[in-house]
Length: 317
View (tube, rainbow, N blue to C red):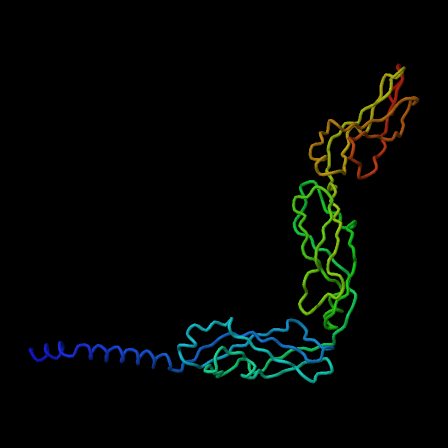
């Protein structure tokens, strides 16, 4: 027991240094141990011929298996890795495939080695680049305030079209190019707004990209049915003792702003027939109606059959 104690207490400084060196050597060995990790890497694809272009997004993604010392790979993020491939000697549109080479991947250290790339073959479609005029289509976000609407038929654009450059098949299929969204939420008045053309992957606007848009906001036109509107008789009875209207009540479909129709009271609608100048007998008389300002009839009114009888006459058949 004494000998063990003596061994522990003697030359303790040298023993401590040895321990530190051993631990450091272990950490160094572990750090230099080659390990493998998988990282997602974006691949930017370019075409050397300026008259040709890739249809769709020019960026693809591959999964790369990397090998390097643990100290280099432990904190390596995918954002630090990029790859680039340039397609050369292409003169005609069509499908193109290639293998991404390890040398085309930019690595932060020479000690990192590319073990495997998936997929091993990348396919793209190449098309001819053209410049074409595209009609501008405004994009609106949300809805105006209650009782108002956006009158799409009166929207004005300046300019109405732009020149865009891109793959022939994409431009011809597109036909129109959209603006950035124009917010119309809660609007009650017409307004003007200058917006940019929205970005379209693969396309480049080569003319003015700003558009002046006139946005017309008008009161919304709605319809509402009013039932059992009484038909009144206007005019003096004179020597007549009996006047009857076959159509005593009406059902009216009215048009107007949503706000006006919402608050319209049926009592404010006057439907009537005029009997002035009529003789004894049965008559077809037009029904007339008086409505508040801004409210209109959707359909024409029918005629009313009126029976008029003098005093002392026999009842009409």
